[in-house]
Length: 116
Image (cartoon, rainbow, N blue to C red; front, side):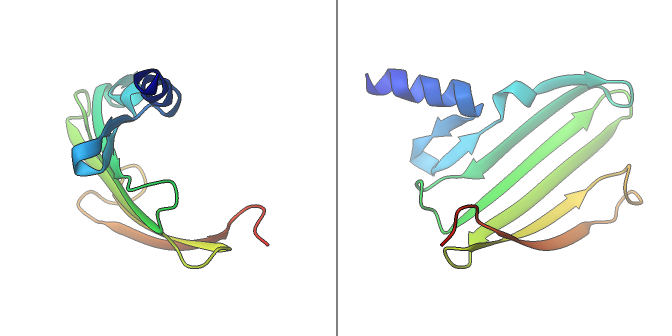
């Protein structure tokens, strides 16, 4: 029964749980893709996962487009400041938005839905 629940979670979330490292690998549905700019795209990502009530989480991905011959990446961190507010830092390199080689850093706070 436990294995069935784990397989169902993987199918719904799109992430493969690597319990020994407290990591989720994925989303598995985005490993291969295709678009006009990048052509064939291969992407691998992951996120930390220590439990449902994590006060913080790190996420990242790397991708390569064979047509544009470019590597892309993204890193982000989220943490629960209190029960009502999450903080998020995003570090990314996106060629369509910024010059190649530059790194963009953003900070964002947002309210948790249904917070008292």
